[in-house]
Length: 289
Image: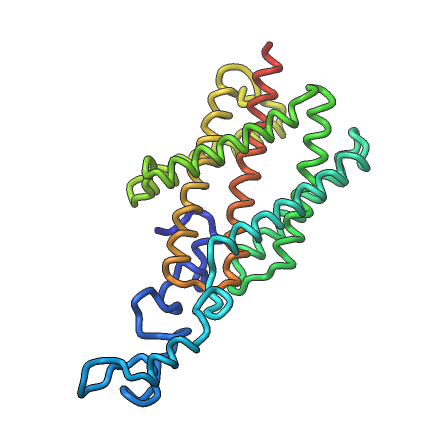
């Protein structure tokens, strides 16, 4: 299943199974195992007796156990560890912006957001995985989020913790729904979700252009603003489900361990989307009170 996220849909990314040894394949790291059928292979059965010899049994017991460190393939533990490091970098940079940047000074925050966008595009369309670039993106995005959150929290005390808890709740709910089979990433599910996402992004672009000329479409207040916020959070949850499916498929195909950084980047993008939409929705709801 191809994700809408360009991180997961690039040629050469971990969703491509042709370069990785799938379970049950007779390849090791993409190369066919070359060995004498009954000599060099310690696990081959004797053609005469059909049983393993004592020498072959001894070789089996003495051989090191296979595992992620031996095979170099991505595991769920790798994804969790890289995602945690990426989010920790994001939070640390956000804390710096929160405490060091004046609330009224948005120039640096906007510059950080633009720089994060550029770095994110480079990462998305780069064939090889670059952990330093991913951490740079997390730092820049975190700085921007920290400045925005601080400004909103000054006007609406408590909105920061509300947005964090809301984002965590959406993530947990989607993970439970996906693992329990309540949400299945099918081609039809993906097509519908991507269609809605494209319409949503187009709507936001039109609203941004209208705002430049002093017009307002009411997307940041009132019932329409609430509806748009709910749809935005729903799309973020949809992106998460695609990410879960891609990660699961990558592990099944035996993607290289380095690709766990790509998975961490994709999850971070989805979580940032949800967090921003959560901030906007809560701000609208509390502003209407």
